[in-house]
Length: 379
Image 1 (tube, helix red, strand yellow):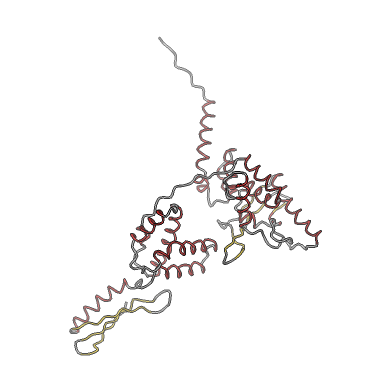
Image 2: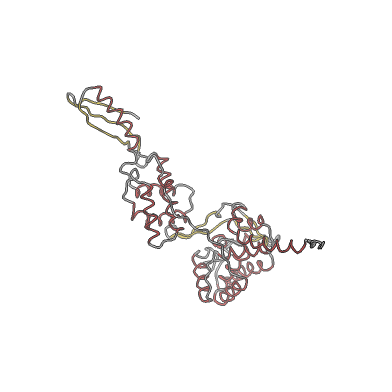
């Protein structure tokens, strides 16, 4: 950090200290001060000014500006478009209206705690508050790296504890009702639901499947991509959530679902449509060139459930896969691989309640296999 002193007239000194570059604008930040006295006093005051300038980088930088700069840096990184869109919505709806004008160097943990309390008083869930906290924590963490602040105050704040929800899934009977009603109105959406339930694929993963992803010779389905959507980007193709590729064995039931979709699209050629090379399995256009819109199966699934008096959403078909496989005694590593979890610990954490039920069943079984003789009555 450099500094200058200049005697602008006898006994009057102009002090100027550089606080480095503003990472956002690239311009240097300067702190200036005028003092009265001799050269010795001017030097002492210059040293003090240099120390205080360390805290001036975040001065005047509002939280709203930090968020904008942070989001721009995220857009240039590998952050998923959907996640970035969610971050922007959280900031727009909850952070900027309450704290956007506050200078980040004046922001305190108490300010954040007050925001969290206000959100709770409005009836917002602890999960939503945690999402707000996560955005603030990441943005302020970036400000710390840029040298705009000396402390990430989000690390000192106290968001409410979010309760871990139990993964709930429809029963086989309920799933049967959903598929029956859906197939009468939209065979393609019924096929989407069936494939998700049979494979545990995420919505975007199912919609990204193409004909070439099914190997009829070895009966294997490859899940390598995902379909995403945001209002800003539209429909786009991306990697899977864990950036991994997994292969799933195909039985007769799953093969029937896949083949039915291929046959349905091939029939469009009889109507004069020319199919593209390697069409999407679940198509949004009759030539197979575009996938279904990601919101379509989600909205339709909720609509069918509402008509049946059920309260499930599409992602719970993934829970159906996991709970049924675990209940059938399939080992966790195999279940984890089928679901595409980063590692088996994720599966263990999410489906611990199912494993507890399995443990009780195991206890009953082992109890039935061990003979414990009654004590001999010696009276």
